[in-house]
Image 1 (tube, helix red, strand yellow):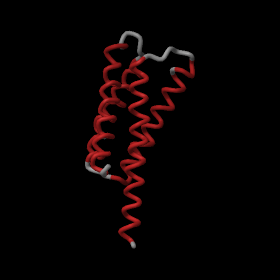
Image 2: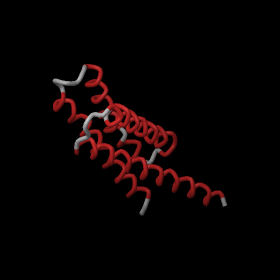
Image 3: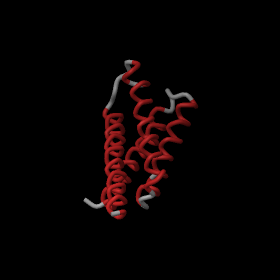
Image 4: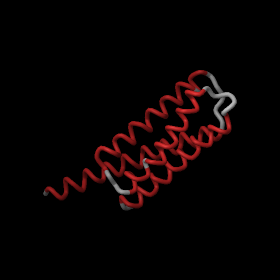
Length: 122
C-alpha cells in the first residue's frame, strides 16, 4: 500500500473521530461542564484540522504531534471513563478504535518515510 493511500486512511480515521467528538457536544450538553464542552469542541476541531498535514504527508513533526496528541486523548479517555467506572458505549468505542487505528497507520507512514530516506542515502 502506498503512503498516499495510507494517508487517506489516516485522514478518514481522524475525520471520523473529530466529527464524533463534535457530535458528543450537543448529545451531552446538559450533563457536561463548560470546560468539558470546550475540550470536546477543541479536540474535535483539531482532529478535523489534522487532515491537512496527514494528506499532504508533512511527516516531520506533524505526524509525531498527531500520534502523540491522539495517544494523549486515548489515555485521558481511559482514565476519565472506564478508569472511573463510567459505562462505555458504542460511540466511545468507535472513537477510540478510530484513534488507535489512526496511530497505527500513522506509525506505518512514518516508518515507511524513514525507510525511503535511508534507501535514498545508499
